[in-house]
Length: 161
Image (cartoon, rainbow, N blue to C red; front, side, top):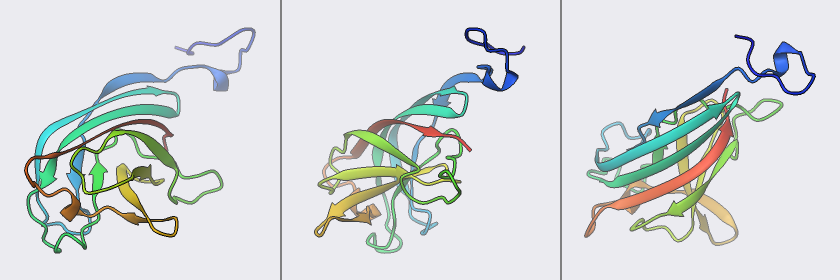
């Protein structure tokens, strides 16, 4: 079909012709340490895609079962976004191509959790504030299974590649 058009607009380029709903499976990952393992208890993700914008929600509960790089060397990500994140306008896949509202960071050893996605990827990188108004990556030793598991839930929208 030609998609839905609004008012007197007849241009095919302006037609709403791409709508999709579905689920995705978020996972903890340490891409720089292939042998780091995770325990995953709950992994729920939903999305709605309208044109080139996708809105995602995520609930992920689990822990780092092993820290092969010592934990302090293992950058933590949430992998599995349903669509690749678009680069920023003008090119470049730097941070803040997508940011997400964090609903919880239960049991994570992080004071202020910040989630960002980069263009040309399907992962959400975890950051925390440090002194001097800078940010550092969250590491897998900050989600070890001390007296329970860790959970993160977030929602946000991003432009797809």
